[in-house]
Image 1: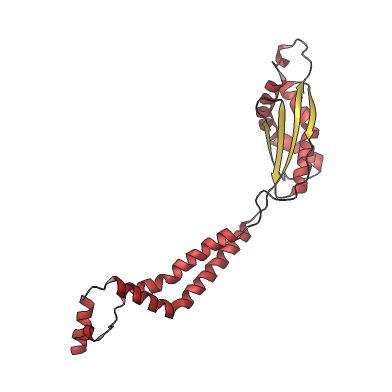
Image 2: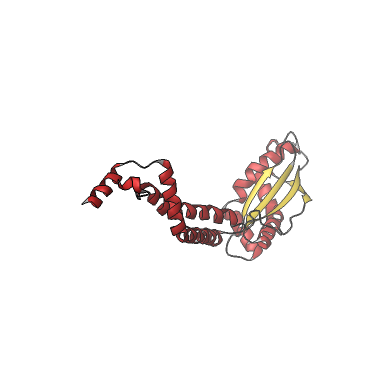
Length: 220
């Protein structure tokens, strides 16, 4: 009966911060293995998820200048300068090259049945220079697609704007390094930290909610 009353009295008294901290570290000494296992397990999950979802992305870039054919008096082919021409082509090419019709031209040229790369064409501001960027997981195919675009651009350019002259300033090359290098450590560390938080939860619960009799005064 006395023991029951003692436990009841202890339960009624609020714990101070020092007791909570003391209980927490006592529990941590006993339950540290749970924390370690949680850190390792969550770190492994983070590493695995990154590796499973990782896809390298390579880019191949080609740069060329556009020069309009000599003005022949026809209003539909007149431009104030080659800078205006490049600006118009930069917008038009993206619409005309990134469509199924031109994709079929590229696929036929490369003898493939799928489009392996994305194509982006942009004009360098205030110049008559255009750049082509092909991107995808296969650097060799990016290079071949860039070559095919430059080879077959004439039919698109003539359809849009008439005869033009292309001068290559930067030849496309096969990319050696991806734009998103394989680096699983950041995600692994984040997941390991989550595991740490999960692993100390039992010790926190013990620290806040488990009351212990520390000395004779608690009994009396």
